[in-house]
Amino acid sequence: MDDARLVCFGDDSDRQLGEGPDDASGAGPVEVALAAAPTEVGGGLIHGFARTADGAVHCWGTDGHAQVDGSDRDTPAAIGGLLGAARALTVGGEHNCVVVRGEVWCWGRNHEDQLGTGGGDRSEPARVSGILP
Image (cartoon, rainbow, N blue to C red; front, top):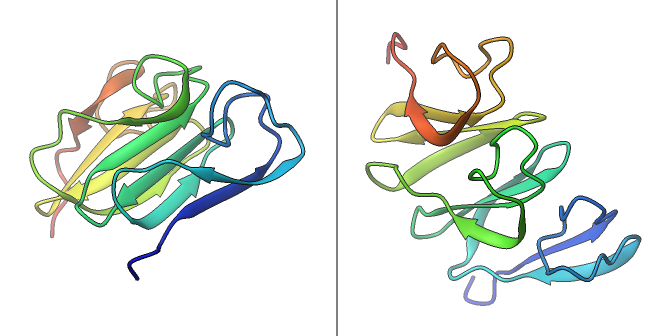
């Protein structure tokens, strides 16, 4: 799968296509620039999310509740703060979770404690405690 790539299409009013600031609403497909081949992707209400073959995690879109990385992103931004390569991901409407070394890490909107971390919204991944293997 040497030529694996990610393409998106549809509404880009909240930067969800991840291809830059030119608001290509209704256009597509457009290629999302990632440093490595995508292995898993997801989309929230106003953001996109990808895990690449090297286990890196990238987010883009509008950051209404810290689900990207604390800033609106026209193109994918690498998510830091993870203690290893991500092995799986899931995306909620305004939050994200990944599995790293058998632990679940989440960030984004937390108004109903959907992150499992207590407290408010989180712009950086936080480990979820109390999950048994």
